[in-house]
Amino acid sequence: MTHSDIVPDDTTVDEGTNALPDYPFSRPSAVEMPAELHAAREQGPIIRVRLTVTGLPVYLVTRHDVMRRVLADPRFSRAAGTAPDAPAYGVDRPPPGTLFTTDGPAHTRLRRLISAKFTGARVQALVPRVEEIVEDLLDAMARTGAPADLNEALAFPLPVTVICELLDVPFEDRGEFRRWTDMLNSLDPLRREETQQSQLALVGYLARLIERKRAEGDGGGDDLITALIAAHDEQGRLDLTELLMLTLAMLVGGYLTTTSMVTSAVLTLLRNPMELRRLQEQPDLIDAYVEELLRINPLGDAGPISIATEDVEIEGVLIPAGSGVVTAFSSANHDESVFPRPHRFDPDRPANPHLAFGHGSHRCPGAALARMELRVAINALFRRFPDLRLAVPLEQLRHRPGQVLLSLEELPVAWG
Image (tube, helix red, strand yellow):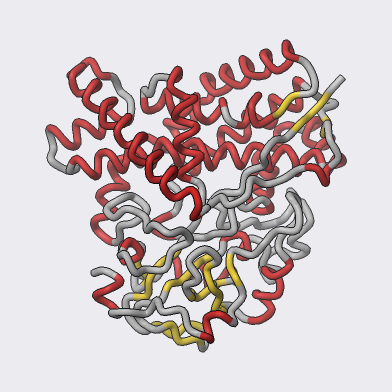
């Protein structure tokens, strides 16, 4: 069922829509949440907003408890969000049939094909290799000397190395890979053609990679792409488009999100020196620190969009069939009713049910891997560079504009 099947035309921008607040809300700085998020939660658990680029109206879910209900409710469809007239952040809609744009049995089938590679046991087995990668990167950072851009020294090369090894993608291709994926993260309508070209280039690259690995036959390895090829060629559980889209999702998702997490986590710790000192003295506290770092640092304000497949009433708000619904994880993770003093970094919270990785059937399948990379990177970084500090005034830090995921343009640090 597509958005068009549900409601023929619900995307006309009328005068009422023009009066709605634009979303995602603008951030006043690299370290401040939009004040509008707090105001939105005060206004209600579900409010109407207008998507900034497309001008289309959607319902914004602001509160933690309601968001969990929406994310677990099958009446809200990700698949319907791929229709040409469905609400979207950018000019183009996401492609259908992917891990992120399927529902029900179709989604379960795709998810099962990759979930076995991201179990707790498999992730734990990767720890020695991730530790080795981190130490090599920190060695290089020490040799180069201060100041250093932590994006370039650690936050980018760590996750891209890990995911390239998991997928057996040649690491020497990382330069082009980074350029392509950075464009896929763009919401700038003026760069639409460049974004489309990057997507085509990346899909073409992955198609050639799949053909190369298929030609290797049984000697292709134990990596995830080889397993997906087997699911396509031998088991018939994947068509070619699904094979390409799953590979793309793992490659892009395994890099962009963790890069953002590492830089924001390090910045938060540098801004909380007492808590940082405590972690340096008690590195076994890292699990609690990572959970709080994930809660307080949203990956982005542009939460996923689902489509109501029928009229749905939640908390007294009627969401008509065909309407777009945005789940703002950044708002849920700062919900005062769940997280007292939400703007305070507090790794001692007695409970931390954050939604950094989502909830329900679309919860991030790589959550265990991301957590592990954060644990290893943070402990090693501050062990090797105990006096690490910002190399520029805080107010000089900037987020890259027009991006789906929040990411700092750079994070200059110094030591010694």
